[in-house]
Amino acid sequence: MKTIAIVDYGAGNPVSVKKALDWLGEECAITADPTSVAAASRIVLPGVGHFSATDNLRRSGLHDAIAVAIDRGTPFLGICVGMQWMFEHSQEATQTSGLGIFKGECEHFPADVKSPHVGWNQLELSTNSRLFQGITPQSFVYFSHSFRVPLTSDTVASCEYGGKFSAAVERDHVFGVQFHPEKSGDVGLHLLRNFCGL
Image (cartoon, rainbow, N blue to C red):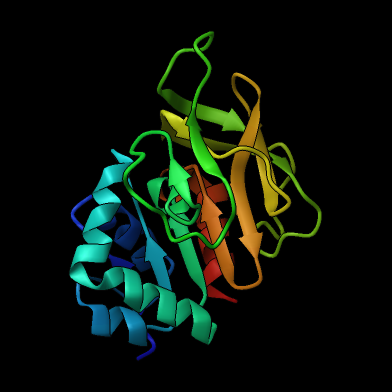
């Protein structure tokens, strides 16, 4: 199966991600079927809303299908809550475990800034990221989130809002972005094109 699987677990807006990939001419499908996800050429996990919604991934079998695909080397991209799920935990839902590929816990923004963080903000990019190859440093992208990932050794893009946080992480064939590439204009489309070209 050469199709990019856009995982539908009852949260987020997979349709907007599909529209962006359709515009790029990529073969993709929205699916909640673990077998289709496990067989896909690439996997995108979108997400909007509460971290506890990712419990649906475990109940449906999608958690295991994604884990198996990642172990096999399938490129994976988590978006917003989809990126946060790649970590161990989130303060938003302490009883819900993430995938645990990356160490650490998602945290709430400090009280001295407005939350959620919504709108366009500027990225500080690493020089060694495949996901951001060809993207201009200090580019603006669109965010909408109340919880954030701290800076880690896998951070390849950061953003400033109540202190610096991880806007993107990358390790081998696994990628996560806190912002919404499907809503970030040419920069977001460039990033999605980079992911599809891996």
